Length: 479
Image (cartoon, rainbow, N blue to C red):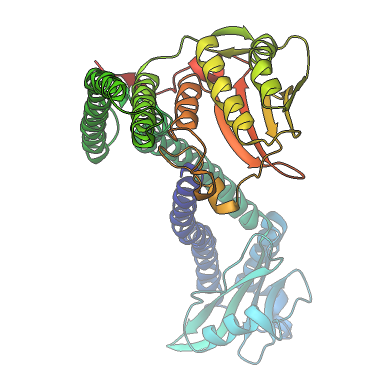
C-alpha cells in the first residue's frame, strides 16, 4: 500500500510546487525586466528633455556651432560608450538627429520599430516583449520628443539583454533550489505521514496472518496511528478474543465429550460381550454391534487426540529428521511385510531441522499408515528425505489408487473419506491430526498425485528456528 500511496502524494506535492513555481518564475522575469525598462524610460526621458530644445538639423551649417546639439550628441556618445547601449534621436521621417554609435538607424522591423511607432503616437514604450534567459534578443525602449504639444522626434534605446538574462537565470536557479528543498522536505514528510498511517495497518496485517496460521494469541498494539485505525485495532483485538474464546470452548467441548463418552461406551461394549455369552456361537448381529462399538471407540480416541493436538503448544528443538524418518520406517516395516508392501527409504543419513520430535513422529505414523492401508500387495511405498532450501522435505509416495483432483482438495478435512474407500477401516481424522500436529511447529503437509499412480504426501520442516519461533513485529501477546 505504501508503494501506491507515496507516489500519489509525491505527484500531488510536485504538482502543487510546479503550479506555484511557474507563475513565480514568470513574475520574477517580468519584475527584472520591468526594472530595466523603467531605467531605460528614465534615460530616454532625459534625452528627450535635452532634444526638445534642439532645432538645428545635422545637415545645417550652424549644427557645428549649436551648443545644445553638440551637448546632446556628446551625451549620447558617452552613454553608449559607458553602458554599451545603442541610443538615437530620430525625426518623424526617420532621419537621425543624433545617434550613438554613428550611422545607427531606426530598426526597420521588430521590437525597435514597434517602440518607434508608439512614440510617434505620443506614447512612451510600455509592455515590451518578455525577455527569457535562453532568448538572445535586445530590449528596445522609445520616448517622444514633444515641442509645442507636437511630437517632433523620438528617442530610441536598444539595450543588450545579457545581464538581464543572467539575473533572471540566477533568480530562477535560486527558485529551483528552494523548490527542490521544499520537495525534499515534502517527500520526507510524506514518508513520515504514510509510515504513521500505515504502521497500524502493517501490524494489523501481521496479526491477521498470525491468527490465520494458528497463533491465536496475536494482538495489535492500539496506541499509534490515526484514531480510526486505533479503533479498528481495538475492534480487531476484541474480535480475536472472541474467536479464541469460541475455539477454546469448541476444543474443550470436543475433548470433554470424547472423554465423557469413552466410559459409557466401554461399559456398553462390556455388556455386549456379556450378552454374547448367552447367544449361540457365530451370531452375526453381535459381531456387527461389537465392530461398530470398537469403531466408535476409535473415533472418540481420534477426536480426543485432535483436540489435544490443536490445543497443545509445540516443543520445538533441533532434531535429526533423517533419524526420526528411518526409525518410523523401521517400526512400520513389519506391517508392510504382513501386507506384502515394499516399504523403502532413501535420503541422507542425517539432516537437521526444527521440529517437535513427538509430533513429527505421530504425523509420520499417520501418513505411513494411510499409505500402507491403501497400497495393494506387491506395490511399493517409498519414503524419502531431501533438503529443499530452508526446509527439509519428507515425501511418502504410495502405489495405491490415488485421488482425483476434486478429492485432493478435500483430503485432510475432518471425517472426510473418499466414497471409493468407505470399506477401509478408519475414522477420517488421522490426516487432520497430522496436519494439526505439524502446523503447531511451523511444518506443512501437502498432497499431490504420484506418478505413475498413487498419492504423494509431502511434509516440509523448517531448517532454522527463527522461521517458526520468531514472532512477527508489531504483535503483542494477549495479556
